[in-house]
Length: 337
Image (cartoon, rainbow, N blue to C red; front, side):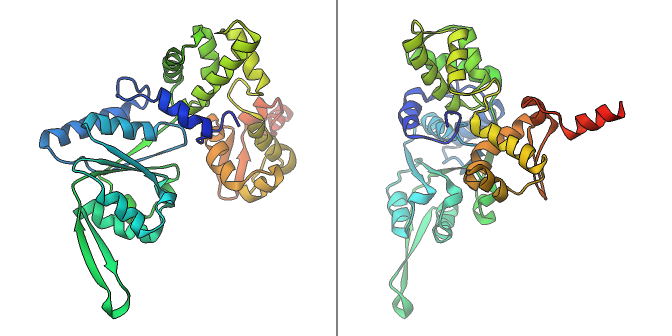
């Protein structure tokens, strides 16, 4: 899945290589950047730790990158973990007690935190203290550990799964949306220079058109087109080379790959355009339900190809048009004419 915005093994190295470390190098998300700059500057002037920050939005939109930039702007160290990695109270205690004053703690996939762990995070966020219970039954006692002021930055792709008590403890919440086409082109231009890839503007534009408005996808496609240019071309990414490479990967002009087209064609052909429940759709396409919800649906909905209703998923007339099919609305309109 070349256009899957979720992190893959090769992305870990690629992200570190191409990751911007300042707001100036970070293209897109202008409103969020402006608000963050004010938040950070105000905290620095007061010489206080920045309020806890919650970042939410789809995979590959730059939440981890923003956390690194915030830490760099503050001149602080950043400690990185994820919700599933904190399995026991001891894991959390080890992380929190190793923080220094002003440090940034970044927790990715915070919606997957164990609920018991959450209970211990609340006083750490509010009072900078950690209460640990030692022993069981009547002999149990509580030890309170003081923590240095720190900033928790949490990231999630599914904010609806966050508990209200945890969500309400963040002083600032920012939504990262899909990027504008111009921002993706700027990102590709910067990445091609870092990777020493010879490219033409038209070639990068062609990649940007199919990058699903997501930086991680754009950088991944850039590498694949570079490979094609090296083997089938003269090492330079032109418009023609980009089109040929992406066609070979079966990525169309809107960035849809075979599974995207399978989902909308299944709704249209097997379920008469919907509505159809996501579990039924998953069974019909042999795809995991969460994969459909987290990876494919957001972009299909962004394009206006898919609509969610209480009864299930519906393919819109734009989806019919993209597949070269006549929608029920088109047929009805033709009959009326």
